[in-house]
Amino acid sequence: MRIASFKLRRSVLYCPASNPKAMEKTGSLNCDAVIFDLEDSVAPAEKAAARERLRAFLLSDARPACETVVRINALSSKWGTDDLIAARGMKPDAILLPKVNGPSDILSADEALDEMDAPPTLKLWAMMETPQALINAGPIAALGSNPAARLDCLVAGTNDLVKELRASSDRDVLRPLLLQIVVAARAAGIAAIDGVANDFRDMEVVARECAEARAMGYDGKTLIHPSQIYPANAIFAPTAQEVMEAREIVEIFSRPENADTNVVSLNGRMLERLHLEQAEVLLAQARAVEEAEESEE
Image 1 (cartoon, one colour):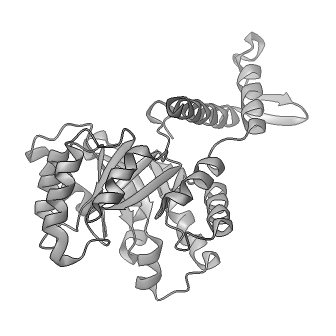
Image 2 (cartoon, helix red, strand yellow):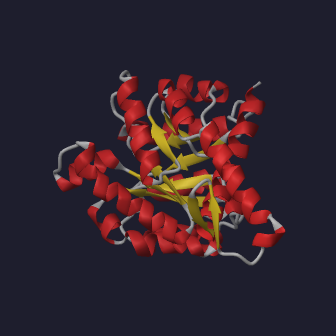
Image 3 (cartoon, helix red, strand yellow):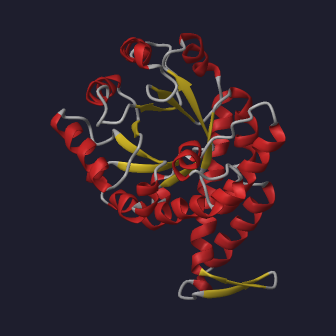
């Protein structure tokens, strides 16, 4: 991942735009990002009202200070175009596109935003929740290498994947698909966020899924309840031991005698410059965590 563009996305909370009380609460939560949802969590009859309610909320002082994302309905649906136009005016950090099947879905949204004179800082996130999305994961993610395409993050839509594939919801079944999404994201240098844990009352399940996702390389996890924020923030943050080891790696490569060296020895380990890059990313994440914790005090 490009270190300069690193953003903390350990905990990404879904919030229904049809629930005013939940929206108001987001300002007091310590999640790294909120996805305000106009799609799955909003009934068809409520979509227009939810859109206007969200517009008023995000243009008010009550809007949360964290990264803000609006999930619109698919552009192919009867609500999608109005959602995209409204979302652009809400000034979110990103717009999350559902049911992405291929690069053309990203490019169509990007072109529409360009026609609306949306600033280049307005990014696109893509839900990876269809069989076509997985088949096209590489070409979709590759758009992230071109800043003009706006693509900044891939989000695993595990519930929709299970439904579309007629598969078991067991994480062992989903793991190869989840890894495929991470591989595509990393190849393009963009972020990847894991799907939700449906049983929000079972913190052991939430913690286990967060640990599995982090081990696979995900940046964070989408959440459906505020109670899931704490385990996600804790598990996706670097440990003190990891930070110490990363600092040692940076220090040894910074020594004058290692300026032109590609391989060094540290505590019985042979380290290459790829380990230095990994250490720098981890330290950037640790700094972001520290800044987030300071802002909460």
